[in-house]
Image (cartoon, rainbow, N blue to C red; front, side):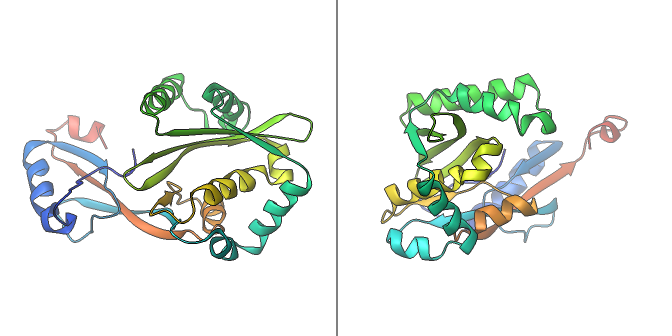
Length: 232
């Protein structure tokens, strides 16, 4: 899980992170967590691994935000409009999960348990009215793209998405994200794309003008031998 670690209301994370890390290091034999972007990598009690996410501040006009899109992203947004795509909110998230399984999921081989966890997370977010579940359709009404965004504490997390080859041809995911930007621009809200270290995804997210932010995975293994060598 991305973006764990210390969250505070009245103090900067940097003021308390040493105490936090020292405390978990003394209480637990095995630690493997991904910290949020407010943590630094100054503490060397752990093994630190740098990772990246991409964040876009929406506190501007849509005109200015759109200007920061890459040429390719602007072209895809315009192409989607020309092809008369449409979007629908509050769709059944199972449609997006099924679309993912039929496409990206074929190559990534997630377990059914992982999909079940995703379903539960989305269901809880929907019950709290913080989930934005949106689907995209071709002009013929064929479902070919969907996304789940979760909004809380001035952040909107791009939690999950799926597309098929049609969406990659008509720019539907670009259109879905641009519409969300347009609907929420001018607010003190950060759209967190939640990744990625993968070059193609990083290029896609940064194409919306999102800025790369570092976060860290920390690990420590003080388990007794031979358990230590089995848990890496």
